Amino acid sequence: MFLRIDKLQVELPQPKEQNPNAAAGVQELLGGRFGEMSTLMNYMYQSFNFRNKKALKPYYDLIANIAAEELGHIELVAATVNALLAGPDITEKEKPVDPAKSPLADFQDVQNLQHFIAGGPGALVQDSRNIPWTGDNVFSSGNLMLDLLHNFFLEGGARNNKLRVYEMSTDPVAKTMIGYLLVRGGVHQVAYGKALEKLTGVEINKMLPMPNIPTSKIPESKKFMDMGFHQKLYRFSPNDYQDMGQIWNGTHPDDGSEVYVTDELPEGGDLKDGGHDSATFAPEYDMDMFMEMAKKLVTKVPTVK
Image (cartoon, rainbow, N blue to C red; front, side, top):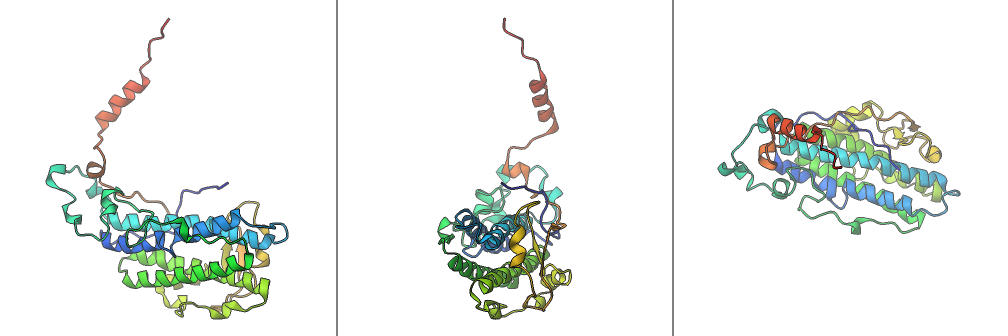
């Protein structure tokens, strides 16, 4: 089961402008082959299908716990997409509009029309090409070594795509989100590397960073590294996953700092309203209508004898 906390894993700034095309690019980090949907579902199904949990408990704990963190990463990317679709001035967008005046005409040439037609507008479970995420992206072989090697590769692909979307981004909300996820994804990649090293003796973390751009060179990532976010592996359970510290220990290959498991959850940030225009994307409601509905709900129905 899962315990959900109604906060983002990190505070996101307000977007500087409404930018649907930037939102379309960020969608790759949500529903792309190396997006957060893929990391979540790969680790989730590997934990569902894990064999010999008692003998290999540290490895099971690691995969299952990282899957829990990935749920929050999906939430963070979706919040970024929504912020870029809404823009900074939410109040103005909630003013009544006349549908007959084509209020969505300005969005005819955006990269992803589905954001506005099917999404409300809001984040969708698809990539930057508008292709829906698919379960074909899930790899769960039943072979621990193979699954760990795949996860190491998956985090490398995710890092590669995050860096490229970062290089396309000009808005602080996208840059902050990517900076944070580069650090946290780096933790996961190093963790899977450490797991492979303990399982096989192969020093796979000597391949890092992959791609060869140190995370500390990204200003939005360095901020989180300076606060030690690259050292921590959060334990997303009050009682379980106690043994992953047998894997997540020693030093970090980036800077030689000590890594550790913590029961302290991220301080997080508030979830903001998407700022959707109620008049454009849903029937417009007013207070008189709500009061009338309330009267009907509290009116006693005569008892039939």
